[in-house]
Image (cartoon, helix red, strand yellow):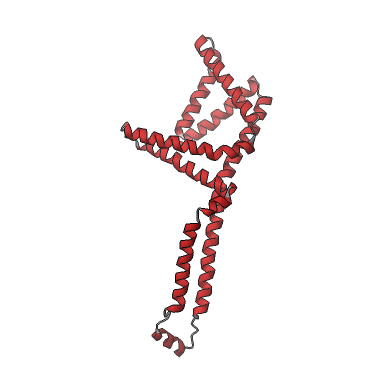
Length: 233
């Protein structure tokens, strides 16, 4: 995060000195490229089809994760001993896997839920074994039953215990299912908000941006960067 803020701070300083730097032909060429790239980005985001973009997000993250995996092998091959770099690449891989799973869970739910069948079979078999064991084995020792009868205490029958077990067993499955939906929705919704916001903001900037408003935008960005640097340093 700090690296991003420092990069933004460098760009802010660069654009603040634009009128002085443009007196040099090389710097003037650099600014021309930056302005062309910025306008191209605005046009791309303004005319973006968000639905189509959402469809390609899993493939994009799959490629991103694959590139990160290659980078990990390269760092190992080149014997680059940098834990921070390795953690960053691993983080990208984990983010890619989580995003792909989340999109598949939400938009390809039937196909994705089939992958959990082996786990559910094992979980169901375990529940059946416990349920059969409730009826076959002696749940309460005879001494405990004698004491309960002596003090007129009510002891749950095997049927009551089995029903309670089935209730909590089913509740656990339902809770897991609901949790998976809540977890999976976080990433698609977050990406959708980012795509929608950047599209609307780019359209607004493309229509309203002029030299004065650009200076104001740089000023607002400077405040945000300074606040971020103050918070993370």
